[in-house]
Length: 84
Image (cartoon, rainbow, N blue to C red; front, side):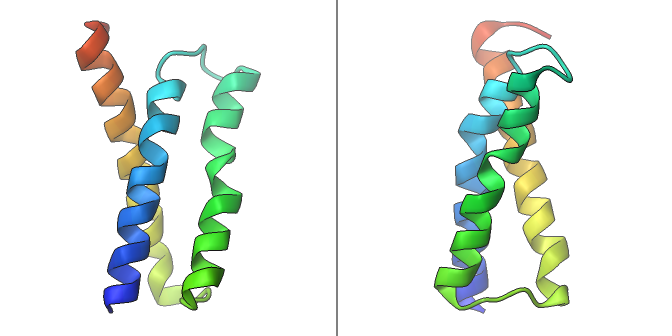
């Protein structure tokens, strides 16, 4: 269980800068697409290196951490730069 928590935390932290970046680019542009998809190979690598694998039961938690990191990174950008 502690491996899952560590990987979930890493996924959240990894997505913070990408969410920050995503919030500053035009929606559906190449940069927007990259800000969403570039972290995915790193997440797959984390799962493989940790030995967690791809058990179906871990997907909801991992997707939640991914989305929370993206959202929080965007919220940090909006708060720091005062944009909506």
